[in-house]
Image 1: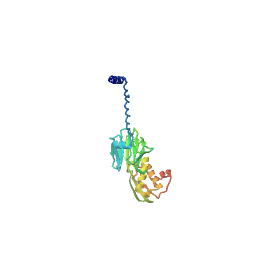
Image 2 (image 1 turned 120 degrees about the horizontal axis):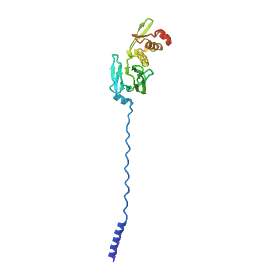
Image 3 (image 1 turned 90 degrees about the vertical axis):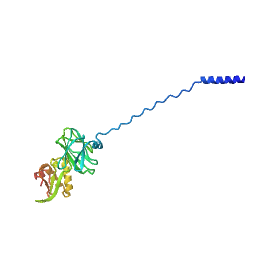
Image 4 (image 1 turned 135 degrees about the horizontal axis):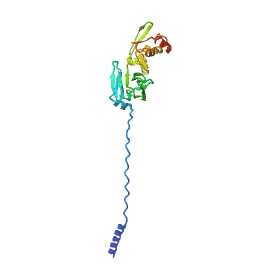
Length: 240
């Protein structure tokens, strides 16, 4: 009897086990969706990018960059450069320098200390240069190109005139064409070549010659002449 009871117990256990529902497997979790990788965007006016893709335009030791690439560049005997740009173009300063557009369509290149190192004007005049950033200008559509130079003054030599010391200034062709950029560059380079010329009266004589005597071989500035107003300066033909 004990054997039959044991056998019955075993059979009962097997039957109960077969009737016990199996545990359901936990539902599979959905795989996480990968986040999209951010796409790096390039600033089309980034000076470093533009310098790497544009055309170098050099005058002396200073080289601007003009975009689009392949822009036509012609250099004069005095070292100035003429740029022919097809339609709209961007102009970029060298590393460590700035470009500033002026109201008359000219612009100046300055070093990190704010000192004039070069200037440019549009060709033909009347078109504009607009500021994009401290290092980048836009040449407006409608201009044939640019004229860039670092040589604004070709010479400044002290001598003697009828009344005493006289400084003979030889301007470049670019300076003779006249512009706000030329006015700044002329004075900066005259003082650099002849520090003794640094006085308001000499600066006024220089500006008068730029406006009224562009074709004169040299512009003669005398430190002993009186300081006068603009009308009197012009009336005296720049030598009051």
